[in-house]
Amino acid sequence: MTRNPQLPKISMSAPIRVALLTEDPLLRAGLTSLLANVSSAISVVARDQAEVALWDAGTDAARVLDRLPELRALDVPTVAIVADSAHVAPVIAAGARGVVLRDHVDSGLHAALAAVRSGLTVIDTPLAEALVPAAASRAATPAKGKGELTERERQVVQLLSEGLSNKLIADRLGISDHTAKFHVNGVMVKLGASTRTEAVVEAMRRGLIRL
Figure (cartoon, rainbow, N blue to C red):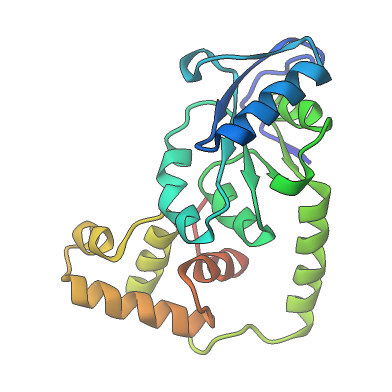
């Protein structure tokens, strides 16, 4: 875990006001019950009253990148709930201070929320275990994909990490939709990615995306 020195120190045992941001009513009900049972010092509140947000990335992998602007817009420390380890890098790039695996949400969530509120960055153990071997493997094997990204392609992959569609990338860069699609395809080929999410993850691993 690492700490953001710009955030004030807060006691880990102090009451926590949490906003639950999810489109899944079953998950909302489950989280509300879990937090109520874990500690009486946790209260679920509206977004504008929260100290910490618990943001659900959802289970549809194709929508995760599209929803990243929603995560970026949050103005409180946020713990993201993800369904797959491949989503860790994109949500951290979008500003999440903590990441927990959807299938492993348990009583430890209280500690994660308290840590994030205090300025720490936390990653669920199953996700960390998935990332560490991958890092070691990358050190021993050549990077996948061929060629270095051009400056324009670096701009494109940065916008991909923000969840922008080809049309929005074209608008942002002042190019045609066709040219934007061409650059996105080029990025995916050079990064050895078959999906936009994989391209963002690989770009994060190579240090091509600014946090």
